[in-house]
Length: 388
Image (cartoon, rainbow, N blue to C red; front, side, top):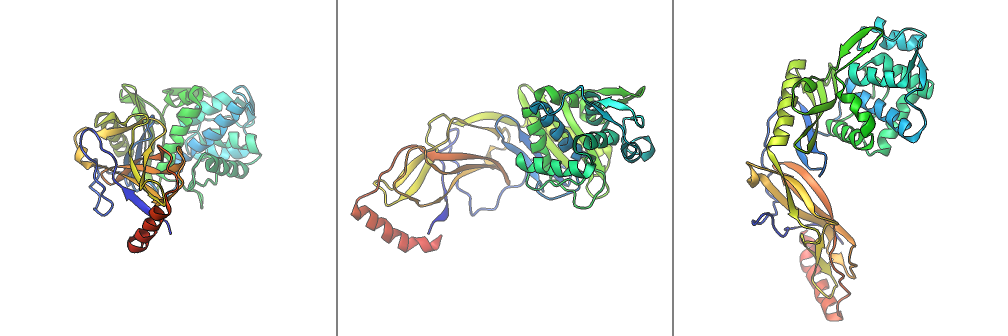
């Protein structure tokens, strides 16, 4: 029977990384007032910070990120264009427009609006009427569009996010996590670079009313260019932000903050720490052996493992003693083993955060061993296998 194995890695920056599978993890390197937070480096996928990142919560206005993802995907696929027009229904006007008392672009009842203007209303002004107008125009009703949002979320890998409406207004069953919000933001930045720019727009005027972007990070001169804020009684004040600094792109999501002021301060501190407290480092070169996995019944007792290319992560500059790593795999691996065969993964931890997981593959082929070698492996497995 195969078991989950953990093995030491070859080393890092001249000192060994210890296998700490049975040792309590170190504390976080950063403290925040946010109840939930998650931050990731865009290039390497290194998780820089995580705090209750997978705890479900109402998305509030941050649900509009998923609304825009559906719209951007439709534009990219040619389903719609920026010049397509949509009619302002009475439902959109009453539920999300001027009479609603919520975030609005003040769309006029029964008027027609270009999709590009609706996008700016949503991304800059967090316009609820803009979301509902889009939802009805795309899918006939907001409920139908919400189903499309959830389906689309699953297709891009968001397993916990479920949407009931296009606005994020309170609704039973509507939920997401800060991890999935950050990954959604990163997806939007990667997949729709020409449309992502709307999130960095500082203001937008519609119906002769100018409103400034609700994202406080844009005015801080820290390289921020997105994305959205939200608030609900259940999840508190939340934000999804992204900054670019000296060639580094960081995306963070936070929620559970007490006020808009605290939200702005905590988001700025987290993102600023993210770009200043880490250093991008190549820990393994292309084709460099990362470690070894045990082989059962093979001509050799182990097989060298490597990644598909170089392994780069962001290392903490001041707390490198908080860095640990291990190779995990289901094993022992049964011979024969073919070069390039998937075997396991390299897990890198920063404090108690799983920072990065890189797939590992056999760096060589290992044939079936002799009858004697296989017999010895069988005896060994009988003797110690039960301990795993």
